[in-house]
Length: 153
Length: 178
Length: 189
Image: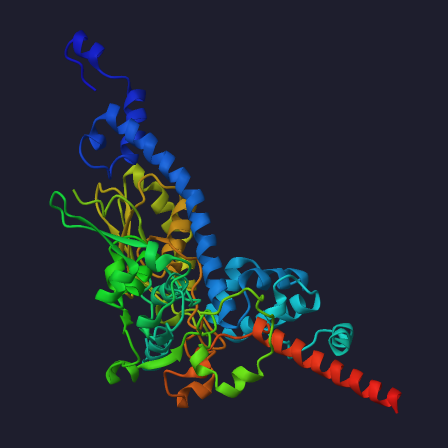
């Protein structure tokens, strides 16, 4: 850099300050109006944007869970098993599938999902869980003990 | 995408027409079920941006059954926008004017707020009686179950059945029959 | 101002023509390296040419490597791919190892533009059993049912109604009464 006078040298901003601002301006590049180019406004908008981004990370997870739950509920109720009983039956049968997997199965592999609902319903009836009275009688039995119990019923 | 893949996609996203008999049903409970089918919430492929809702035909809306004193006490508010333009119509009055409106409003309230309501409500077809246009009826491939059993009226029992019915109690001696 | 150039493009991974399934076809068609014979910034390129280039070219007969000496120019690379994409890259002050790594990367790339992947996997067969459809779990008898149908409409009665219970109690009572009468008659006899 060329400084013709001492005054201009004194007025030259600190190079660190430039990089500090550049860091913020890179993040505000897509904003509208002065919050894109004016530092004092840009930094406020960037801070707010980062807060939103942080919050959205949680929202995204919650939204995904809600969507997966809705899909599983739809799939299970199609076979006459309420969502709560479906999850309870699977847990008691030691089938540890998460919501994402179950919702994928409901849409992409419907036969597997149907057999899962049958397992869950049978387990709920076998364990006599509240609300399982209205479920259909199972067609398949898992283990000799369960068959015996149904036989004696 | 091959031709076969394309047909599979049509199959997955096919719109189903459901039919629902509103006879002796609570419209506000029924609306929950109907709105679910209109939005496509009953499908495992559901996504808010996914246009997968179904059509629902509701018939016998003239014969709905409101709970409790709802016919007398439920008021539908409307304001013309002019001073003094407010009006409150009771449910029984509204039902006399148009026997589909109670059902229609019940479903409308049940749907999510926003502009999507207009598109969703277009998939609801309500008819006051059992007459349904043939071109709609031929689309139907599924029937929604009623939420409560339709009660038998006294007229539908034969005289023999009434005679054979066990006597539950005796009237007191000082009871005056009308 | 448009914001399209500010961020990475997003997309889904694709292999051109199922490349790598059964057979692999190198997607780069031509690599051109421009460099200077005397300038210091081309030092690494010159080292690469002297030591690694012959082996590299012999091992990879699928594409051509052009060398273009350009006097007093900063060295750079141009890679051209089968899908028509063209990539430029500066080799200014790069050393030999860096250059051989970058050239190798250009060789193994598919030529797709650099993008942020929304999903890290891709499958042509997402479903083995067939995707769910509204008809997948329907009873086939619905095909010949006429609507509206009284039987399909009626609510499932899982428990007896109060009327049914009353009638049942009444029947039971009648039976008991008749039995009691019979026993009385027998006693009297």
